[in-house]
Length: 186
Image (tube, rainbow, N blue to C red):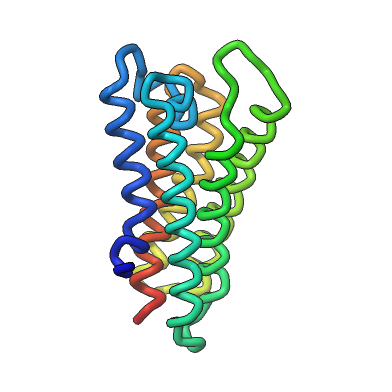
């Protein structure tokens, strides 16, 4: 398998989720979350998106671990971020979110996995950023970590904008993992 597929898996996930949302009648990119696509007509494709991109991201972590120069500062935190993202995508695909107005244990676990993953990603982005001060990657990761953390708060506080806020914070996470995979390999 070509390394580019592994490196771009997080971006492919976000692209597929956007495309599926645009192709689904009645689905709002502004209001509806990425996970809620599983309950729509193309839901099987969204589940596959979670699982395939999750497995590819875990493959990326394996590849990076075998190829990384141990001298790269914060390499273990970057690898942890890649692994957390991959495992989260797989688990979120296996444990679907609830339909609107319903509450189940599986749906609550799905929500807890998402929130935990986002908090871990935000913390790792900020830790790697401060470990690389004053380099260029510092500023990107600082801004990305802040977007991720405030995006999670925005999702909880502004439900009518939950979908678009989630896409921004997921985009920040996916971009940091993709860029870090290139940076880590240097």
